[in-house]
Image (tube, rainbow, N blue to C red):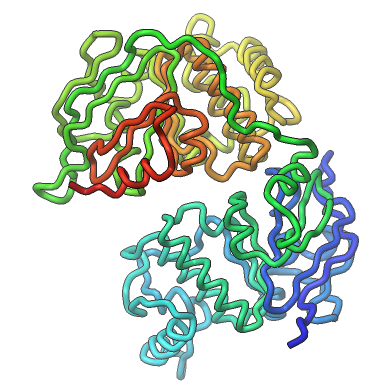
Length: 506
């Protein structure tokens, strides 16, 4: 069967004040294909998707958009949906209190004399889910589903519109490995049905697992398009960043000193399940200038270790925590910060930044006393310090007064790191430090982390990405079921050994 050209974009230009976000972009999607869109944060990928989906209406950009060969001028998301385009955003748009069926048909419920036909909604949903190969109860509340199943509901919701073009923006960022496999199999089924998919993701292994073509964006331009089978990750990365990344995880020579943080028999009861523990007899040490990686599957207790030590996980706990030989137990994050701890959380937008505030204010947030004079924040001092970090970390921002929400993911993460660097920490906790960040920004963040360790900071890093754990860590501990099930030196650690320990429940 000959593939049909479902979507065409010609010479798309989109400008914001002082910034040309898209510059003469050309892009197309065929029926039954996955066309992956790769590029650094800020390259223009999301802007293009918002044009295709109607979020940015015709008139706010120039160029031509065609669907099935017909020129279209979308003024809203409703217009694009009517043309067969649906988008699944990284941030899910589901109503947790409603059922699967109610979410899928929200705003389009079949009714009779103004009364919603609940039985018909359930029947239609059941048929749709069966057709897609999704195994879930249409009457179950979405809030009771796992993130992976919620992602499936979002896809079903889009396809219930009879979409022929499906845009997927970072669809697997919060999924486990098992859920990712289910997701990829779903996309393969959609390809067979003739649906054209646009995939935006920073995970190049997924791109090469599912994509037919790859278009690379850089600085608002569509640089090149490849058949996926004719190119490798190395070439795609080079095109994305405009340079060769010869060594993503450079071996940095540094002196590792004595113990800074020592954790002994840390046990934390589950807050809602009697008799169950989040953490059981967890013990480890971290030395001055050392990067300790914590690996394990989702739900293994990795994040809970950091949150508990940092004073952000409330409730009872047993065991002991020592900082440079002194026994401590923090009742709040502020106490931890006062003693030299810093935490880069996995959700930077919710827990790491004040998005509506400026770059300078975010950098100073955890160190207000350092930028204050007589108890009042000195704006000129705050801006000077912020500009020093902007230069040192190469944070791309128009100026220190710019709102953090307008920065790319990688630059937002640099702001978070700058905030904690200003506190002069003794111990730095990193929880998924490069989640949702492009490959170029990752390399820069790895350098920052290595530089901090070289200055004597004890670093503890949680990551779901084994190459990252293996590439950065001097030593790795592995969690499973709330317990430490393995410990490896840098030379001993391999993906096979880590995964074996991560699945060892006894």
